Length: 486
Image 1 (cartoon, rainbow, N blue to C red):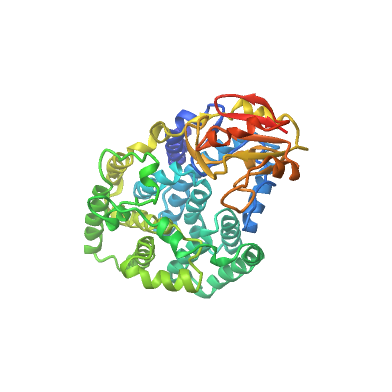
Image 2: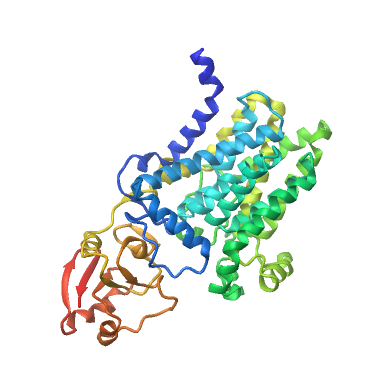
């Protein structure tokens, strides 16, 4: 009896083990996992940011109170573990639904759900610390699952909450939903999901537009964050292989033991064999899947060649694509397509489909064991904790005036964590929307600055003149920074 139960839910154990294998080295260690944009701090303070979007403010306030219940370093690990587990598990549920699979354990669905998690796209997003975007990516199949099961309230809540966490998915979910409307029993009911979600989202979208002009992102941003081409085979090859993240070359991205191309060719061969059987019932679903997948692939190319008129219209004139100054995010739809196609292609091979797991794992072997050691637990420096102990009634200036830097305690380039770390009022690059700060003793005293935190990053030595100012005292110094009091 126990063995039967274990077998019945073995796919859950498998997906959980898969997530553990990715996070294994850091999951049970104390400290914070800092990767570029993934910044967790002890207090997760929210008041030192000049947020343009209301949803970002809502999100920060939520986590500020949540870490009072669950310690931040534990919460971070729970979020990462659940996100990775949910990515494959939710896809598995969705595939069983669209494939009308009755048995609990489906090897084709399990294999395809594995591909949705273990691939270069998820790998690079983890490297870049885009944990909120990955939450949206994980819940996309669950959203479609609710939609196809006519659970409208569940679909609306999922879409609405995910859009607050990751605004890109307001559009990505819409594109995916439209593709699957033909497979609902009552197609008009799709409007009962779309209209309420969009109306509720306007509650944070409209105020955000007043706080941040929509034309803030220009075509220069689109060029700067453009998808990255392969040095030999070009842009399309990179995107087809779920790569092309704009900062891929600076994130120490490690290739797998084999290119994902082998998996793509295998999917193509199996798909041709599947279609040769003329499965008329699945034709419509496959066409819709191909449509949304290649739409994502097309948009991921950005404003180059064939895509330029589309981006000129929807990015520069209609502003619909303004959140996507980094177009490679559209590959999430292409990844969705690959998993669905793999599932249907492998259905006729039953248990043998599990053999496809081998090239999937080999193609993304660098993801395992903490992204090949790139996920590490670190703690904030003593100089930061010393300054935090001075109380929250102080006013702190953080220098150098940078948003991203290679912080010694993190061992890599990350976003400046100080606005989230300190409970006191803070002046930093992220709290004031200006590219530079006019540093003078007179200005600091006029603004009521009590402390200056000089992090030993970037051009910090050019700020050491502070030490020679009158009535300025060096209170604390370590290998990461210097604390001056005024």
